[in-house]
Image 1 (cartoon, rainbow, N blue to C red):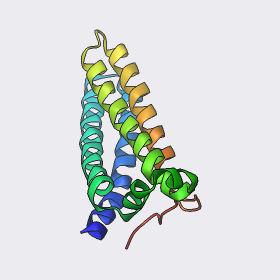
Image 2 (cartoon, helix red, strand yellow):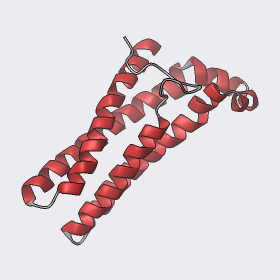
Image 3 (spheres, rainbow, N blue to C red):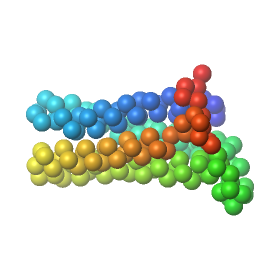
Length: 151
């Protein structure tokens, strides 16, 4: 079960990153009604993929992952180990922040009084959420690095 959820979580990150980039670019270029609808669609796809990723990530974090289980056994020692600290604290914090910022952007955009304000809020929040995701991914070469594609 662990491997299946981890593989799914790993592969969906690419969809989340692509949707984040497309939602950000869509917000940047949403100057007319057609482009605005397309930006809204990519924004919704971004939010949906992030929510799925969040659920899979929490399942890994709270139930399935041997890394977090080891970190919870001795949290002080885990903070001294870069790999364990990354998954126990850093990855979780950055990804939760990305999800919260993306959702906040959707709410703020709905409350915007002008299309320009809506675009600006989406651009800032989706761009920041995408940046947080990029920072929080365990890229190969890092202490907690993982392969780009799990097979």
